Length: 222
Ligand code: 5RP
Image (tube, rainbow, N blue to C red; front, top):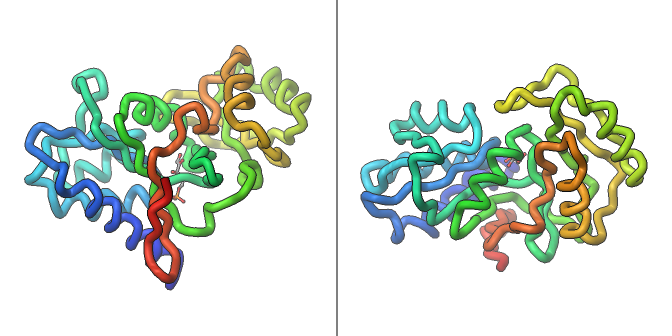
């Protein structure tokens, strides 16, 4: 089974997981990335069974509309019952690193609102300790060098994602060489640094369920 086939399989599993709950009032939170794109394509098959979606990025909004799914601004929506998104890494407690696609801020906002966060990944994303994947940090442009120095003090190697601007007009530092032994404490510390908009650790609000594709099938981890 190729990685693409695993992404499609886990996207189908996510749609099956939420299909019974879909109703005409329901707004689905939708993430960003290649696995989330597979989810959008599967979800579109049920587009007459729910009201629409909130997108975690401009790219996702475009794809949702192309698939005939109405996109709502989060401010128009009282409730998101379920949010489905990929991740770059997840650990045994379902803490995540996200933001490889640069959409971490809106992803974290939608995840915060959602009652249930279903994370869809293939088995290559599973780790014991987060940090092998460089941790994305969205930074206000004028704070980039200051934040890079602060991240270096924490033992990381920040790398500026050259030529990339987020949907919010900010820049990304990808922090290499981290071994994140206490994700919640590290996330809180990063939240306290002025100039950081969002860090890509999802530990204070981890996934509720991880659906992980393997060549033998999709596993459900809670
Ligand atoms: C985007 C993300 C993605 O969920 C993450 O990068 C995984 O992407 P993919 O499904 O393409 O591997 O956090 O900001």
